[in-house]
Length: 546
Ligand code: NOJ
Image 1 (cartoon, rainbow, N blue to C red):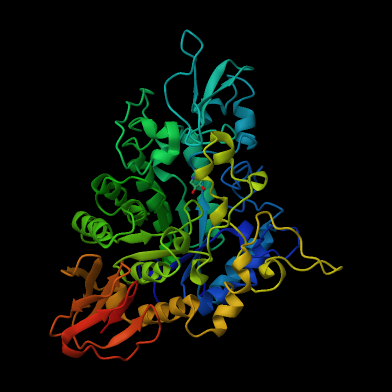
Image 2: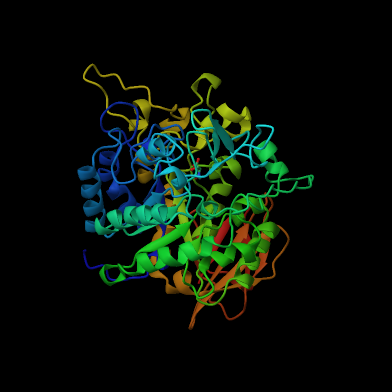
C-alpha cells in the first residue's frame, strides 16, 4: 500500500460516486467501463476529491444494472477484467485516491450459482442460503411483505413447491444471513477485495439483511398528506417493521467491522451502509453502541427534508443533537437513485447545495456529473431501462434520468464514447443531454465562473481549512429563508451563509469574525470585506467567510 499521509481519509475526505455504465466508454459499445474510469482519474484529482465509490461492476445479468450480482469476486466483461480492476486500484492509489466498492449483501442474482443450487431441490445444502417458506394453506404467499419494486416480495417456485423472498426484483433473491455459511462466504468476498487493496465498501440496503425470524405481517401505515414515500405506491402503504432492520443486524455489522479493522494496520478500511431510516435515533444505532459497527450509515435526511432553509437546518440540528461524540456525520444530496441536484433544486440552487454539502460537519458524497451541474434527461418511454418503473408501472420513479452519460465535451455524444472508424459515435445505453454543448467538463474547466470551478475552488478551500474539515458546527439565528452556521476549531472560525430564496437577504455577522469573504457561489466576491458586520446575500447565493 502507498503511504498516505493521513489515515482518517473517510472522515476528512470527500467521496465521489462513479456509476460505471455512464462514466466513460472506451470500447465504443455505448456503455462505460473500468478503463474509462482509469483514464479519467485525473479528473477526480483536478476536482479535488479524496475517494471514489464505484457502483457495481461485477458479473450480473443486469436485471437491476449490476445490483443483481452473479459473481461477487470478478468483473463483468462489459466493464473489463479483474486485471483491469487491479490496475484501477493501483492507478487510484498512485494518485492518493481511495477506492470504495459497492457490496450487495442482501440479495444476489437468481443466476448466482448459490441460488441455482438453492432452488435445485429442497435438500440441496445451499437451500437455506436463501429465504424459502411454505405457502399458506390456501396456497398464497407466507405473509404480506412487498417488493420495493412492486408486487409481493414472494415468488412461487413450482419445481420445489415453496416461495422464496425477494425484497427487490424476483431476479434478486434475498440471501439468508442467519445461515453461518452465507455470512462466511460473504465475509470471504470482503476479504477478497480488501486483499486487493480496496479501501472500503458502500453496503447496499445494509439493514435489509436481517428480517423478523417469525415472518410476521407488516402493519398498515397511515396515509399522510405530503408523504415523501408516496411515489413508492403500494410499498408506502405498509410500516416496514418486520421485513428489514431486525435488531440482529447489529451483531453482523459488529463482526463486519472487526473484519474491516483487522486490515487497518495497512491503511484504514471503511464501511458505510445505505440505510434509508428517517428516525434519527434508530438510524444512528448503526454506528454501534460503542462505535463498533459502521463508520457511518449514509444520511439521506437532507434529501427527505425538502429544499427550504428551515427544513434543512432542522435535519442537520436533529442529527447533531442525536449522534454521540465520536460518531461522525455524513451528508448525501445526490446518487444514482435520486433526481439530479440541478433538476431537483434548480441550476442556480445547485451551487448553494454544493456549498451546504461541502461545508457541513461530516463527510460529503458527490455524484458524478453534479460537479458540472448535469440535469436529468427526459427518457422517451421506449428507451426506459430501469426495471423499477417498468415492473411497477410507476413512471415517475424512473431512475434513468440521473444515470445518463457523463458530459465530457461539447462534441458528438458529449465525448462519452469514442468515435468508430467510420467517424460515427455509438448510441449510448441512455441518451445524452442535449445541453452537453455547454454543460461539459472541457467547457467548464476553461470558464473561471463555472459550477465546475466553483466546486474545484471550494474543495481546495475545504481541504486547506481544518475548521471546515473537523471543526464543530454551530447554527446562528438568521432571517427566514436563510441558513447560517459557524464551523470552529480552536481559534479558527468559518461562517457559512446560505440563501435559499429568490430575494436578497441581510445577514448579521458576529462582531468577532474578521468578515472576509472566501468564496461566493457566484465566484466574484473573494476577498471582499463585510462592512458593518452585515453580509448582503444576493438571491440564491451562498458565501463562506473567515
Ligand atoms: C439500492 C441501490 O442504490 C439501488 O440502485 C438498487 O436498485 C437497490 N438497492 C437494490 O439493490
